[in-house]
Length: 255
Image (cartoon, rainbow, N blue to C red; front, side, top):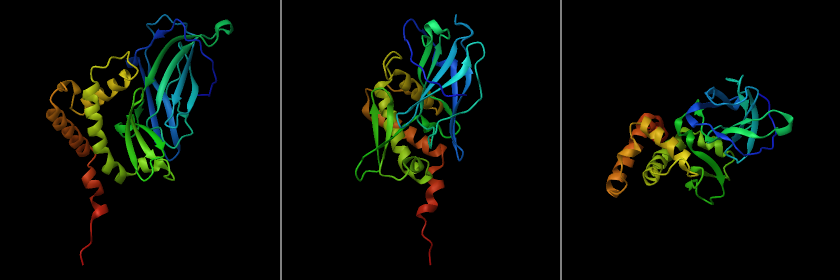
């Protein structure tokens, strides 16, 4: 896939449902990549030669654009390099753009705020944001558009290496997941048309896959919500065997 630059006209566009699009993101020793893996828009009355343009917003607020073929011949399974240390927390917009020169750049259809499937852990839904936190290591912020954001102290030599450290994850993520669980209960009735709606939907789907549907909570019983959120955090910790994996860090050899 090649990088592209474009100026877009947003009038008269068709909405592409999120369930029709799927991306995969991978971070490894070779770098971070995103690739289009599924696109079901055959039923839409779109020109077969219309261009498919993908915009990736990285955790550093950078926007990377690349093309993914045309409506009639989309490009699947070709990784696009992000030039970032991690693909965690990226969001993706997919746009179908009119190809003819007279109206080049006019958006015919689009889907915004997609999250990819990750080659690594599912908590990659979190947006990672380096920030000046003084002596604090991290902070969980709830952005009105991006949703849960994990702020990491920008003074770390490599904040993204910290994020991928198993000990750091084990000590922070259970508490983060609990806070997100409570936030989800408070925002579970937000619709898709709300700026934060699509993000809430994705987190709700993730929690449902863990066996903790947010719809089971009415939000009125504070103690019940706290108990449920504790259960989510416990199940999450068990899923990744956090205690077992970090116990050796604190073991003291006896004389």
